[in-house]
Image 1: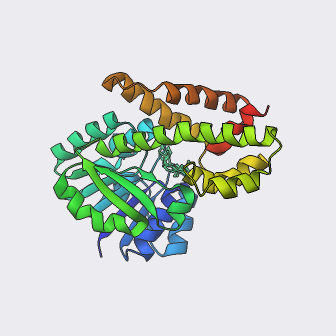
Image 2: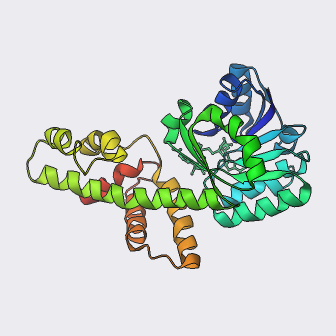
Image 3: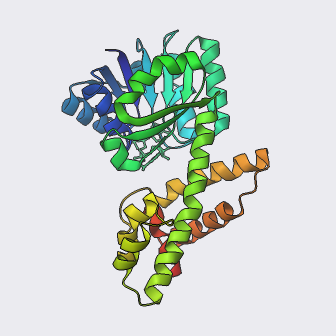
Length: 289
Ligand code: NAP
């Protein structure tokens, strides 16, 4: 049993912190900007709620974090009362936020200076993956820190991989999001075309999902796409944040991402349709306006 802190009890962080307590059996202290959520978590799980990220981190062996974007991450780590002011030497800070590789490397260097470890460890698997403790975790950072943290991370994971030095976890998550962007647009066009053709979409999917067109998106999203239902899942606003990170990184490493850039523009149209919080499968909605 380790002494663990968790900062950021959103859709993802709330159940992840829960698994660290119930499945991992760790002594968990939580912090959330909106304090009521931390109080609720503590009363549900029997852990403690701290008033600041710094207070949560003090004395812990592992400090986890899952907030929104680069700015939020800087705020809860190196901002006033940030966790980095409380992490003890020899501890490991594990960041599950989807952020840039730049901020990962920056915080890794600051942590090293202060004598503790930093791992960028973004996740894939969505709300359901977090609730079921079945996330894929892509980790960047020093091997020794990874060895220490991996058994603890297992509490909310079905797959954990050490991808390389600081930033490599975030770069792997970018690969993941690039792969999803084009695929969801392709699936949207396929379902849209099928409907226009007058085919029975359920029958079409039943047959083609056993062939080469099969994907997680097809299995899990065709039905809601067909029904025009998008009030759940991974929000378009979050996806655009992730794609912006990918496109900025591509400007640095000179990768060509024409489809990703186009799909990002399509998502901006979905936002203009009022779809900021719709699931990413709502790309089909702009084809059917
Ligand atoms: P969310 O439900 O919006 O939760 C965000 C959390 O971060 C909340 O606890 C929020 O506190 C906190 N926060 C945000 N800005 C903050 C700041 N400046 N200072 C302190 N706390 C701050 O988001 P989520 O869906 O859990 O996503 C979290 C991260 O995981 C994002 O990077 C997202 O891209 C990534 N992710 C999400 C999914 C998904 O399916 N949702 C899947 C994979 C990865 P309050 O409660 O006070 O607002």
